[in-house]
Length: 197
Image 1 (cartoon, rainbow, N blue to C red):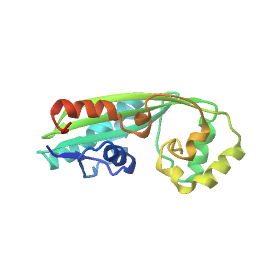
Image 2 (image 1 turned 60 degrees about the vertical axis):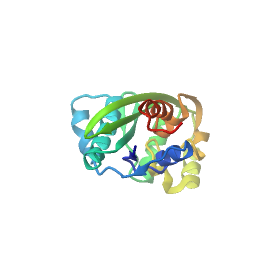
Image 3 (image 1 turned 135 degrees about the vertical axis):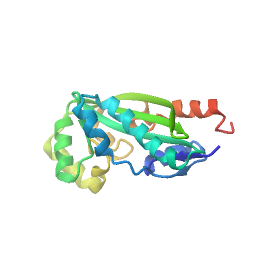
Image 4 (image 1 turned 120 degrees about the vertical axis):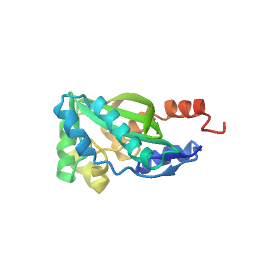
């Protein structure tokens, strides 16, 4: 049974590889902002947006690869009910970090499986992360050390790297924070017989 990851995310690919899951990558070409905009206008929550984005990606590739099981995934950052996106440049990253300092936010990670252009399974998990209170000088030191990588993740941090030093408390599954609820996905793939053991 062919498995395809509809994402170009190196982190998601790395998680599946480390778990020994045989899969191919075919990144979805869905315009995420075009999917998000009407959902936000309709008052959908950041969690609902994450699920809709994961579904859109899975369906996009499933229509092109109807014989495969296609995995779509996405993640949104929810700060006080507002949906945040990746910072476009370092100044935007600076603003995000300054706003998050000393506060708790949520990461909603959705994973979806589609086959023959139909969503057959979906799962959503949420993690709560609390940043420590830190100064503008700390933000500048972090940005200097992390470099342009800060624009590759919403919130301008990566907990698997230097970003972990910005936090005082994390409640939630590690894989969920990295953007792929791996254990529920593996359980579903086992149920389908898509994994050899």
